[in-house]
Every structure is written in structure tokens, then in C-alpha cells.
Image 1: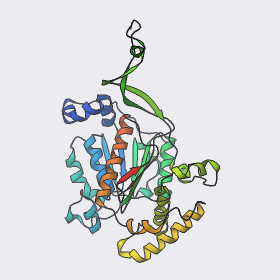
Image 2 (image 1 turned 45 degrees about the vertical axis):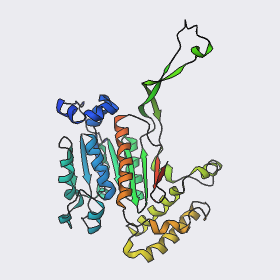
Image 3 (image 1 turned 180 degrees about the horizontal axis):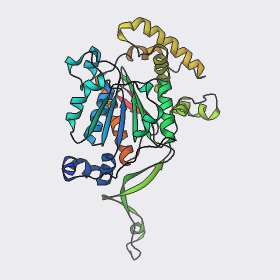
Image 4 (image 1 turned 90 degrees about the horizontal axis):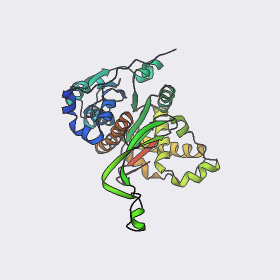
Length: 342
């Protein structure tokens, strides 16, 4: 039987209280203390991974492990601000370490140049949260299943050109508190008429409300039976980006990479073919996803990485601090329209 590591109760020092004063005022000491005791694994140090790393380090987690076996390329330098331009050919995690650590010396930042695919199951149990970027569908499903059995929070995300997505699994029962306007109840001895006896919202005061949410696994989220009546009824409310994600993950599985601008013509034809095959396999209309997406899903766009890194980083912070309502499983961003939806 594999045991997870034993955690010490985190304590906020005076120095940390000064460093995180603004955040403590925003979401409270308890939330910051939970963050300060959290160990996070981040796999994939591309453009999106760098944005997520920056946000988690500045938020003040206990430790962040950067895991990536890839080498720094010219494209990495364009999309990723943690690696110096002189680091081409070096490991991406190791090349990102110095700048990442300099963001916040109070956070323990580690670099692991290994392959996430080669890590044994018990490797992931040393963390409170695992965040996967640039990974294959099979790997994400595997890690999600390992972690969900041990109540470890899992996040997945990617950026494909103008498109980005995030998935989170916080378990069957995730507890959090949400700040709501305080409801002022009338006093029993009020004699000012019926209006005075109604409860009113006090805009100057808030109260914390305890809530819980339930999450499905990534496998369940991706393997919806679209022939069922329940799924058909929800099809109109399902973002088309969900089906686009299926196409892009299938491309990554088949080719071992993402669409490449240097192979634009061939990859465009392959994306079109995969789109047709995926929609047929899912038993949904072939008109659901037209050809427009093909020209806009190449490379990591830095502005999209910034948006998705902000969303993904904030969701990890909310989950670890148990403060505010999380996104329920998926969040999609379309940079062409400039909007996001879950």
C-alpha cells in the first residue's frame, strides 16, 4: 500500500504576512495559510505552463515542482518568459528555474527534467495538486484516476493557437466558502409596516457561506454517450469547443505533437479528417464543427497563454485555499471572439 507524505500544519510567519498582506486582506488568513501548506506539481513548461507557474509562485504556495523533459527551442523562447534566449537546447524545467524562483524566494521551486509519462503512480501522491499541460489524453486520464482515488486535486490545460481550455477534478465533495451580501432580518418588535418586516440585503456587510461541489473524472467528462436522451438534451448547451478539444487531443495522440505551422498544409488536411472521424465516433452532427477552426489552432499564442494561465492559476488558488466557487470541470476560451465559457 502506498502512503502519501505526512504534512505539517502550515504557519504564516511575520515576513510572509507582510509579503502576502494584500492577498490576506482579499481572501483571509485561513485561505493564505492553506495555500502556504500546499505542494503543487506542474507538468509542461511551455507558454501556458510558465504563466501558471508565475501565478502560483506569486500566490505563495509552499512548493512548486516544474516537470518537463523537453528542450528549449526557438518557439519556446517566443511563448515562454521564464527561459532566457541563451538557453536554447537546455532542459525547459531547469532553464525556467532561476527566473521562477526569483519571483518569490519564499516558495520552494524545484526542477525535474524527467518525463511525466515515466513517473510511477506513487510519484504523484507527494502533491496536493497536480496540474498537467501539454500532455496526451491517455496520460491525463491515468493521472486523474490515480489522484482522484487519493483526493488529490487535478487540473489539465492547453493552448492551441487562439483556443484554450482548462479541466479540473476536485473530487466527489469539494468544500469551500463563498462571500455573500449579508441578509438583515427584521426585528420582532418592528412596527413600521409590512415592508419593514421583510429581510433585506445590507450592501455594506458580507458573510461567508459554506458550500460543496461534486466533480466527475476526466474520463467521464470525455466519454459522454451522445446517443443517450440526457446527452442529446444537453447538446445545445455544450460549447462547440468541447468537440474541438476532442479533435486536438486526437491529433496529439496520433502525431505525438500539436499542429505545426511549418506543416500547415498537411496538418490542416489531417485536422479536417480527424474532425470528421471524431464527430462520427461521437455520433454527433458533422456540421457541429466547421472548417473555420483549422487556421486558428497552430502554436501557442502568448496572449491566449496569459488569459488561460490567469484562469488556470486562479482556479488552483481557489481550490487550495477553499475560497470561492470553482469552475465545474471545463472552461474554454476562444481568442477570436475574446470570450470564455464553462
